[in-house]
Amino acid sequence: MLDSAPELIRVRRDVRGAAVVLHVSGELDQQTSAVLEGHLRQAEDLVEPPGPVVVDLGGVTFFGSSGLSLMLTHHLRCAGRGTCLRLVAGHRAVLRPIEVTDLGSVLTVLPSVERALEIPRQRVDEAPGP
Image (cartoon, helix red, strand yellow):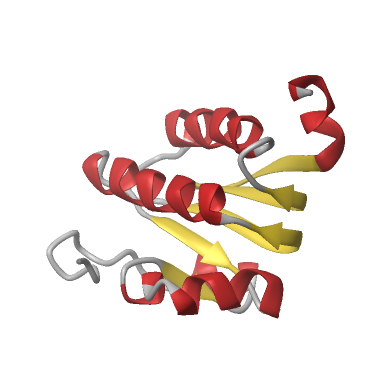
């Protein structure tokens, strides 16, 4: 069943200066999270600190607990590499799971890619955390 994962999720990478933007569409769940995991690892290798890794979740139609876990893991990985992870979300399918789990206090969630690229990088000791 894992072979069908690429059909359920699509990821397009866009390098913008020192930042890397991943545009994600489809379903982000246990079956598809490994696909995005690979793209996130590549983005982390490509980004030029302190530039951010921006994950545009505007095209995501389902955002399950595996997606939340993946975002938290990569938030911590980015912080350890001197960069940051910023999520772009503006619709209920993504925002509701973040709100219910209170991960909005840990993850940086912004309404647009443009906004995610324009804000200066927070120092790690200023970043929200658990």
